[in-house]
Length: 267
Ligand SMILES: Nc1ncnc2c1ncn2[C@@H]1O[C@H](COP(=O)(O)OP(=O)(O)OP(=O)(O)O)[C@@H](O)[C@H]1O
Ligand SMILES: [Mg+2]
Image 1: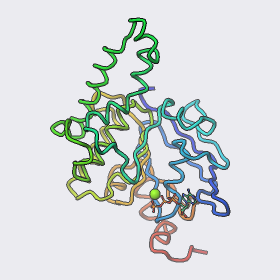
Image 2: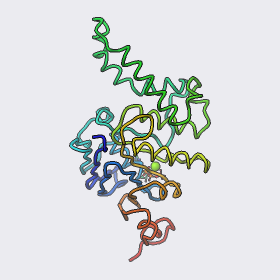
Image 3: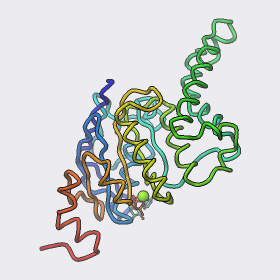
């Protein structure tokens, strides 16, 4: 478990009416790897993430995280199975402080510690200890994302790049085995992108905030980030997987070059 868990995406298809947004996509994300999913706009990357993270139920195919069949779980159970995500469009509680955002993310863990409230009524609660741990975990992630000095500021008042980091901190506070990042470098300046690369590597390696190593699935358009940190890259175009390999293999792949240049597919 400490080495992460293998994600197997097997022939996943997602249709919206007549549109096939994800078309029979298969790949594995190995434990302890950063696996990138790239492709032109509209290629189906976010839709694939939405299937893995339970926002959509795939039209067909299997998604396994270790022994857990994610494609069979209702959306709210997928977080409990150890999958956390960030969103292409930031979704924080803008009026709450950074610290509060990270505590809300741990709500389920806290509720479980108080036996969903019943223990508290009986005076048996482990809630105070669990709450202390939750605050400690939140502080550790604020520090790892360089936001400790903004702990008590409203999340909505942070600069854009800091909000992106807070989203990652929030996802990590749930203690995931698999972290799914949807365009975390979008809108970042080069210095912030470099810091992001370091943070994602540290999350993978288990050297951030005292957490265990965590496999990472990364959607990203910033090729500097993708080529710099990915162990493996999956390329989608028009919903289908057109290439898969190491950064060096992907860089040299004619199908990928054609997809990005918008040329007709090679015969
Ligand atoms: N809920 C939906 N209903 C209908 N069509 C959708 C829905 N979500 C996505 N699509 C369509 O599915 C296709 C893939 O969209 P998706 O957002 O997955 O692409 P993407 O690779 O994430 O693109 P981008 O790089 O622009 O974020 C697009 O044609 C999109 O319009
Ligand atoms: Mg997208």
